[in-house]
Length: 267
Image (cartoon, rainbow, N blue to C red; front, side):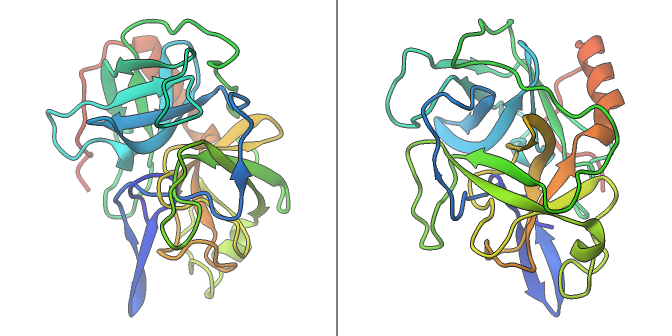
């Protein structure tokens, strides 16, 4: 499964399907969001450049994808909240340097299993209509196939590479794990801690990794991977389900004093 740049991930076909782990993602086949109607959306940036999306889960914590962590141990992500535009300054926009960057301890750079990252902000964020956390799924239940869910991001919106300035979103249907593990799909690579969603010409893709998959106003997954060419009916977006990781999320937040870690766990 691909886990690069942002939302979607790459998959390279070399006789067998492989997964790439550079942050990427693009909202393909969607539309521009109404400004500040997705106040839980976060832009993770390096040197002022959008790298990944993220989900505000409390007034001091952001959930994203582990493959979005900086490649160098001395680099720290900046967390930008309250934005619609990536170019224009907005009164609602606030930016912090992450205090802690905590990868899931079992994140595997080869298989991309456990592709989750928690970021602690240095202070509690002043909440506003443009900055609000979103509840995430705490019960380990499957989202029924066919459920329409929303994914948002600042990633590419066309296969030509066009990248928007403003936040975009698209609705995608959930695909059953049985179908997604079929031989013409991902051939058994989708674990119980993952889920698939998408359809022809509607997908997350380059620039969107780390953002949430929202179903019935609850965050169910985090954009993790997909095929190198977005929007293929039998290569939907791959998401890390949040519910199986609730204990780790709660324990990490409760401890809150873990050492900063920006490198991946050993494969």
